[in-house]
Amino acid sequence: ILSSRLSPPSNLAAPSMSAWGKGSSLRSCDALLQRVEANDPSLVDLAILPLKTFTSADCLRLASAVRSNGTAGHLRSIHASGHAVSSQALQALGVAISCTGTIASLAIGDAQMGDEGIEALCRGLSCMRTDRMHGHDPAPSPPQTPLPSLQVLDLSYKGASNGAMRAIGECLATERHSSLISLDLSRNQGIGENGGIDALLEAFRLAYRRISPTSESSDTGGCCVAFRRLRTLNLAHCS
Image (cartoon, rainbow, N blue to C red; front, side):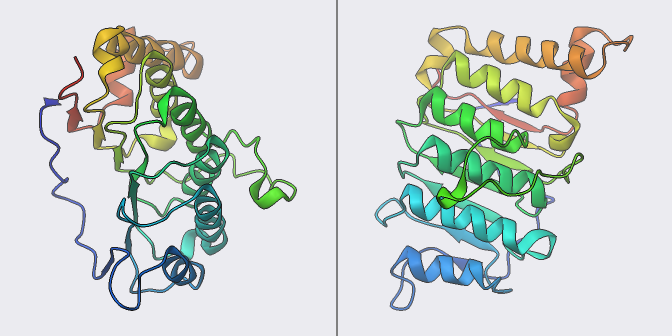
């Protein structure tokens, strides 16, 4: 399951059209976000290159659009690595992804994201809604059983250490994220230097005990349940 190179899962269908945030008609994030808000059926892969501008406000807008489109949303992947995004915006995006069950692949944040940002994203993915989107009252509480959706999570080069590993472990130990098949944690020096992998596995064990307190499975078995579909765990350059 350990890999020094992240390969795209073979069972993910290739998108019919991609929007890479460039070209004469797609030079701004505003144009791309308008297409998401309109639930453009031809836009299934949103990739915003680092040389473009993608702010926390843009991320909140994206989260609102994904959530508004609901289960009928056509967007399937969000790739916006290399952009500084606030914890509030990260949590809002996580909530939208968890509640709609339409986003299969996510890459978000920059090298300064750190434990705080990853913890916020994981709170959102766990539907632990505490933030406010656009300064308005929080949206209605998400459903009790969010649709499992996320298959690929890329958190490479995000300044992660033990706190982030614990948050990821607790988040992914739940049934709602049992669909995950690829997790990229490469180039996070804090993982290898501070026992981050142990923190990740311990979080799995503790979360599984809370979820299944009467289960006869061992702690290791709990980790296997959480990771049962995971095929690629990229830990390259973490030490």
